[in-house]
Image 1 (cartoon, rainbow, N blue to C red):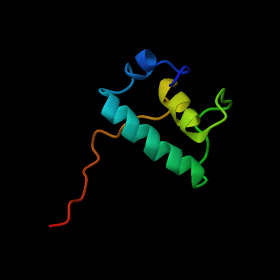
Image 2 (cartoon, rainbow, N blue to C red):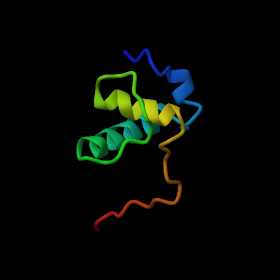
Image 3 (cartoon, rainbow, N blue to C red):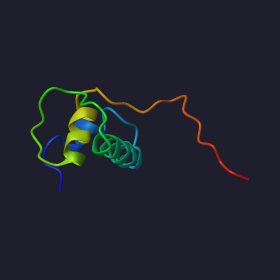
Length: 72
């Protein structure tokens, strides 16, 4: 269960729990792969927690212009 940041705060930054889960997972993978941190200090010890904290601070957001490439 997530205690910080709160789900309510996170859902003010994204439009659904699904979008939140996808964004947090993608950002966590980026951080694991060496992407620069978007905020200076984290309260969480885990990478997914870091991603959620960045989302809550507004440092990471969904790109509304991103189009998925679908192979046919």
